[in-house]
Image (cartoon, rainbow, N blue to C red; front, side, top):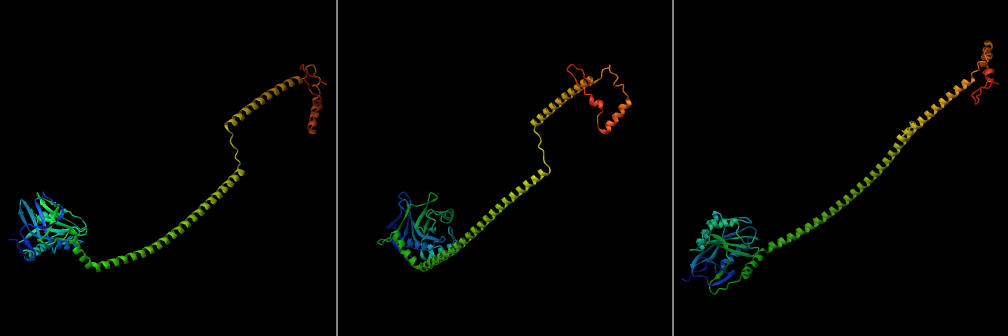
Length: 370
């Protein structure tokens, strides 16, 4: 049995593919090899290129061949995962998804099985997230089921296979077709569906570009208005600052003038107090000491002078006493002397005997009488 035809009009060859093209790198030590029919490969990439905002995916249909101690996983078809719940970084197969895939597989791929799944990573690169590994471990846990990841924005892809109970990335895989059919290179395969995508999306792209230009124009216009408003605000700010500085300078000058007037008033008040109540400055300690010594000296000098005068008066008094041998002068009539004294007092004249008697002290201590 060389070939048989299924309902999808794809030729199924039970032998290992012979007309193949390597994608990636060859791994001769690997015990598993993945083959994808060229028509299925093109369908997968055509489907992925339209899904660039959220994750999308589907089921891989085919069979496995054990030969020469190695396992060959051969993929003949792709089933879109309809009714799936998708976000930008997750993809969930619902019950409706599984039901639709099994029904479609029964119609198009009779006698084949699900050998893996495919999902996209829009601009995230090629890897399996923890959620992807959870799906692989729970829904595609057979050792011959694979995970196929495509990044439609970066145009990269990768296949993951089970090895020793761990899901790891394969170094490469093969695209095949029936013998004699040309296999396009990876770039040629992409050029086949990318222009079609561009032609379909050209009106949308034109609208998007026009909207972008309009947005840029509106933004530029708004920026111009904003620049004018900013310039006005800056001018107002400068005016306010200048006015504030001028007011501050005037206030400072007024404060200086008021301080000068206050100083003048205080000086005038001080002079008036000095004129009304002159303040005698207190002598310093040295001046007080000098004055004290001067006072003591003056007191001492006056004391000595007084003592000298007393002594002189005493000597004079002693010299003026009449000798005891002349009692006749004092024996005169007392009545006449009294009368003469009274008349002298009334007229302000000294008695004659007092004027005439001028005691003189000789060098010998005697007294001469005229």
